[in-house]
Length: 162
Image 1 (tube, rainbow, N blue to C red):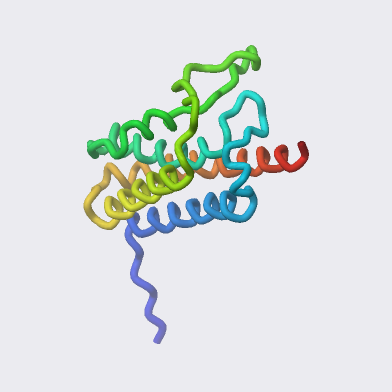
Image 2 (image 1 turned 90 degrees about the vertical axis):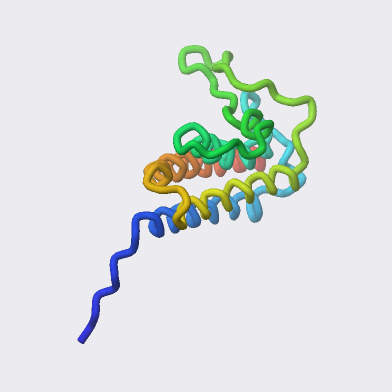
C-alpha cells in the first residue's frame, strides 16, 4: 500500500522557499544583467544594481540581528545596503532618508561574499540553530526579495531600452 510522505517541518519548507527565491535573484544577476552594468543606474532616483545585490542579504541579515538576536555580520555592509532610495509618494523628486551612497561602491566579489555569508547564516539558523523566531521571519525575507526581483527586472528592461 502507498504510504504518505511524512510531513515536512516548517523549517525545511521555509528553507526551500528561501532557496527558490535566492535562485531567482541569482538568475537575474547572472543571466539578465551584464556584469559591466552592475555599477549602472537605469533609473535616476535609484542606486546602481550592485546596491540591490547587497540590499537583499542586508535586509535578511538585519532581521536576524534585530529580531532573532544574532550578532552583526559585516556591520558596514549591513548599514550601507540597509535601505535604498525610495522616492516620496507625494513628491517623487524627493527621497526618504537612507544611508549616504559611497563615492565608490564595494567590489562585486565583496558584495557577493557578504550575500553568501548571510545565506549560510540563514541556512544554519533554519537547520536547527535559529528556533521559531527565525522561522517566523522567513516570510518577510521571501516577500521582500520577490518584490525587489520583480522591480529589478523592470530596471534591467529600462537599462536595455536606454
